[in-house]
Length: 496
Image 1 (cartoon, rainbow, N blue to C red):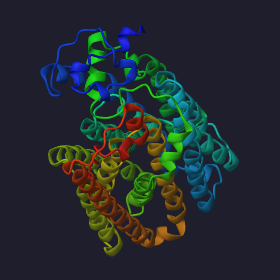
Image 2: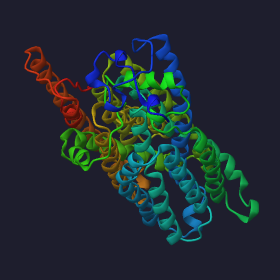
Image 3: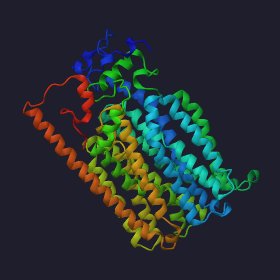
């Protein structure tokens, strides 16, 4: 791409200080506009059509390939591989240990590389690992392949969240992240249907039904990964699916809002900023509480429903309604967040809905009542996760700092998943997992406390900065200083 293509008319922003240095001296003519003009809406539709379908599909496949082990288990995986109940939980935990180990390195590689190549390559790699799950013959093989699956899937979610942050303005990101995360709920719904249908292949080619679940769903992932090389976008300043004028418009509308349009060079100072920011740790601990319930639900839902007295094939299909409800909840939560410009109260409310579900699961004995509890729990858990996962990308300024912050949120958050899969032990299955459900309530209450703390802290910080600017005590700083300060700069406002 030529240097002219990387430039933006500063008249679009009204503030040359906020235009990236590499974009500041443009001779390219672009018509001035507001950020919700017909041209902007057309541009966003074009960006949406390029980013959201393919990236959501990749995440759907990612979640499907990590969680279909729950469907395979009730189809005979543990029995055929002679995997003891504690060993099965260990296999689940090993996936998340590998996942959290490789998330931050994966986003560092992404920042220094290219999402168009990196994300499809990860998809291909975990597709191969998923197929291999259907070919293993013993417990050691299960352990090894779950580690490989976790390592290869680690970079997708934080990587996509970061890519969104360089294409969309802050207030435009959250519902797109919510749609993207909706792939997890859809994976749960499709996973139940696919597991039921593929299970009918029992004995075909001398393989069990649970083996075909892994093989066919893994092959689907591999095929999609090949197509992804042609559809996953590169960085916004090099977006080839946009015309030169559209690219200039995109970068110009991003420039006043955040650092998204700037071509930031990697520096370890931004990595240190992320690790030193208490808010970054707050987002991470918030997801830690929600990740505990998210992954225990997604991995143990078929087992929980089967434990209510339903046959295996019924349990596979009965995972569909709660996951469909969760997808609808995500859509409604994203819409409401956009209307109210609030995140914290909706996250807290979602946790409350989930807590109601777990109370019903823990206190009732009727299968019908417990199945209702499953719906409430799934609705609250998935909606809350969809809202909280977009929060750091809206509030962390500095591209490298944001990339690390998003990866930290997923890394520390998913340690909750490690704890969860070890706590939901088979020893509690006879009591319908009552004690683990109570622990889930505790984790959700922890998340409520963290969300409340983040809400209070950011609101107070916004008030402090507003008081400084209202009193005229905000000093002018040069562009490089603004970049270095990031979200600590006095004119930056947090989305609460």
